Image (cartoon, rainbow, N blue to C red; front, side):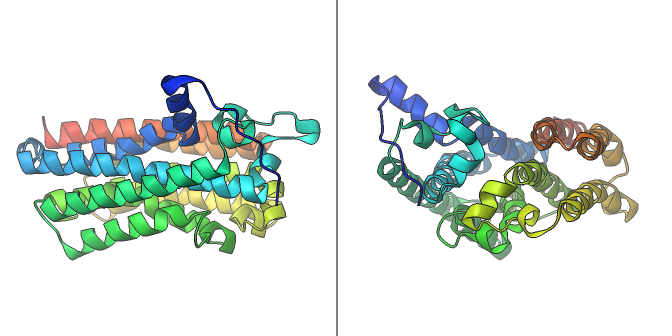
Length: 320
């Protein structure tokens, strides 16, 4: 087990808040909140302003803060305990490989006990508010309740608890969890699941998966050392490139396939053309230079462009 640094607490309430904001990776939490914007714009205009719908989305959002905080925090707790964060963020002689400000446990701004306590409380917070959201929701179809329960119970198991990423299920869990952040609130507010919303949820999921895939490529040595069995660790360099190429093709197929099948309107493909171009550029660039972190950063851009294109499509398609 890797040694954990002693905490050097940030002074004052504002400083302490900033430390915890870095612990939960607030930039990525904000990205995940874009799922609720997709949910809201995918509704008919009259449904968007329904009081019960707005209340359900608001309560779900409050709980979502806790769930996402728990996911990010407990991942870092595991990372500091098994040494994977040290391996992936610090090179020979302690030199920075990535910005350490993302990891307050590595910098000593928080202790493991403080982070672990915060992660557990965040998960309880999320569970309570999601229970409230579900109980008072306008609709409670069984599938939506099941998705919500699975999202709550499994999302934190990526590297904590069951540690699903350590047994080769990390990529599948990430795709499900990110997609479910769209599916769950849409289901309990509208009571149904049209093909278009399923496609948009999967695109949201692929957006996060395609970021993680290249991160895992960068982290092969550190992950392998602690037994985290990502696809990048389990396969060869060529196999990993084929895997990322397969994900890229599936991402494009999620856009094109439903339109060809007649499940969604053809101009959805037109609206998502910027994503297709960026996704192909991301993969082609990685094949050319092998720069996993550059491909990852391009994935972040592609994810945000995806959300922008989906929101624009929804506003035009459903009206305002």
